[in-house]
Image 1 (cartoon, one colour):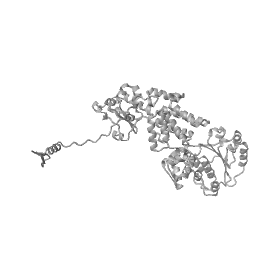
Image 2: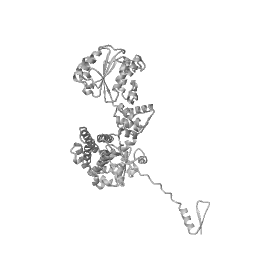
Image 3: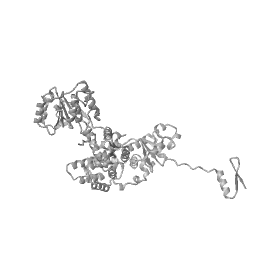
Length: 552
């Protein structure tokens, strides 16, 4: 009979356990030195290896030929433990055996010596489900068990355990497995199964699993049932994800406060049988990614996504204020909670969308902060009512700061060296930076903030544009006065503060140098004169010298 992947590829040695070195290394050392405790407590979220490590530990303490703390897997004890015929390793589900009578039966059995192994090991899974009376009945046996008995307790909700139980056990905390480790394990399993999985697909599965390797293997099992070559499209179809374009479209429409477009998008997804609660979760994850990008210098380590998708997220994060992102997260979380209480999911999702597009209808603190920031910036409440400043040509979207990084040192140099915009440039070549530059969509908002700082600076940057290239913001301004102002440290600081307020990141400043068109080669004047003479019917001959002799 077919065996699912998470059971087939369950680790049989501590070395095979993924992402839990703080547990496996300690247990191996204890087993090697013979320091075996009478009670262990394994805590952590689902699918992180608690039951797996409990089974390995139960085999290791009884193995006839242990190898550096690991069970050999070949002796009769290990083979019997693997096929479930070893009576001395008892697994108990506390969810269905949570009464006092069940614990009393366990205490009576514990008094008997093991039948074949050295230790009788009790693995109690989901131990937090035991009743208060059952915990009390277990206390004395757990504190002073017979010398041949070992208890291994496993739980996902350690806060529900009494302190008297916690104090009698050696506690090991299992962390969520990093996405990179999960993706590496998925590659290995797929290869062993004679299939293949793309890197982007493995990272997407790891993100959907949320740190649980068992969930990731279950999803991979489903994907392999659809195709032996697992791509990102296969994962999207198997997991019920309709791509990610709708997430970007939703966020952009909310930023523009276009309620009609958002409602049409929700209706389109609903017609495609998209679950509204799942959509709400995906949108929350999307806005979380935007929040991390806006508040961190580099959020790649916290986002299990491809480089292409990270660049796309980063571009959208530049155009959406942080207050809008937080307001969206707060509203979506409230909507998801109401959906869980039985509210009509589509109606709740539409109400949340309208509140996001119309902050004045929302009385929450996040909505109020969003409205206050919009008033401070002087930005319009509706995209259709945007003032001329925000509707200037698209070139303004991408350029912002013009003062270079080395302005502080060059401010002390002779004025002749600072008279030109290009006299001071970033440490990197501005030409190289300009090649990879992308427009800064939030530039009009930054100019609005600068207008509040200084009308002079705002006027100097009228008609300017800005571009983002790595850690630099490159500014292209038509007036030299703009660069002269930014050579002053106080004005530079205001510009950096305005950029950080809108984008959430600190950038270095530099000028934007447009690629120069190749100059046409000028024709030799003598050749021009000879051509004119020939057209007039005058004979022209060349001499040995590099000159022309015109004969009349």
